[in-house]
Length: 366
Image 1: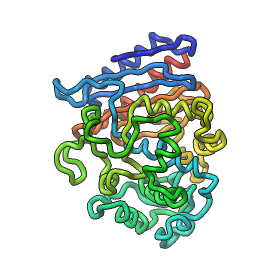
Image 2: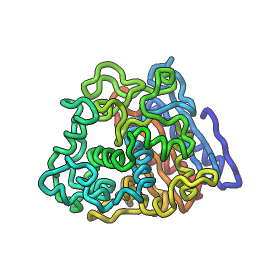
Image 3: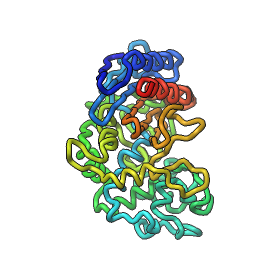
Image 4: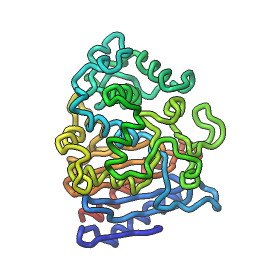
């Protein structure tokens, strides 16, 4: 572990916090991921940070540092797009038809799809589509998403789909009157103090960015310093479903805003009511664990492990990232990895995530 900070007044057991380090190191040795950064925060500030491994499996690869910048993948959905929706909610009607904001979203059954359906992943849209195979540019990808037929009637089921967020991105840009990148900076990154979270990292930062996959999704060579997701790449690197890069510390700042009821140092970023509304189960589709943008813990098989309380919520990213929040215990947990290096075929993250979260929460609650 590069460093660990504990505050005994906040309760976590330092000996059990050290157990978290052992979990990360064991999974790095098992090659579940080349390296990882973990972080535990509470509303008052940081509690502990862990690092393990290297940027790649090569022995001379840089060691992971706490300020490394990771491809956040689908954490973009909650950090950027969902949070922009919260900020714009007075002007973005969640129960309005999507075609009011995205007029090209037309076709059989699509007039029954609302913004709320998109956020809860029950709009009827199919799972991930490989638009990057035929599309280049934001408008081409959005047009392809709008033209995709529904797979099931809205509200009757749940399929996690990036297409929901492609449409949400277009909706918030129309309501907010600015680009997604500008809206993210205006409503989230700036107010939350996330100075090292960004789209399109500059070349000078690449040394701090662990690489992701080799020869992925029609791209040659190693993906390093560019977004891993193929559709986000086809859109130029700025997308509502993926594209953000950031540090564990910045995500900790974001989670502290959530834990503090939407405030940062006394300044309001989000309303408490919006946080409650967006992080509670939506109840739109039978059996769904989905909130609005966020996911919630489930009784079996959750990446959050076994110890987060019932009202907890979080999200994962394909590259091996996750954030989970337990408001009852005033705990926010960040895990950043590049588990897709050198290939997405490595699914050790399925074991790493719950074991890591169980170790963290054992220190918090036991």
